[in-house]
Length: 206
Image (tube, rainbow, N blue to C red):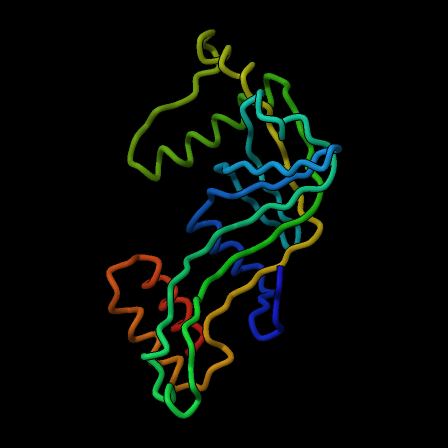
């Protein structure tokens, strides 16, 4: 990832917030034949100090479910178009359009598993987290044969990234008046992502 120093973020609390807001990630691998595979997956996240653990699963037929080696996981934050017309210095500085956004790239190796107990625990925790978000109460019931049999169709993974890069491009390279103007303009948009970017920018102005 192209990462100018002005946009680099090192505070892991920002990673916590990024995945709390959107835990649907992109997982990218390259196989022995040089073919690239990408999966889009819901995950569970936990951090203890500098140690990060991310858990999820694939459908067993997914080629990634047999992957050995390095992976790249992308965490997607909010993003929004920024018009040069918003800047107070747009004419004298000849400003151009850009895009503000937050994203994280995590690299490392992952551990696959397909034991029934481990998968049952993972599916139970995943369903509890995401059911709560939609106000529902479906539960995985491991004592039920028809629920337990579904586990044969998935492969789980645990991912402890060895390298974490975060890019928060939030107009840090602009003067304060421009940043304030962008915050005001984005805050007035109907797009939730635009308002989220404005919130991120505002938090850095405090």
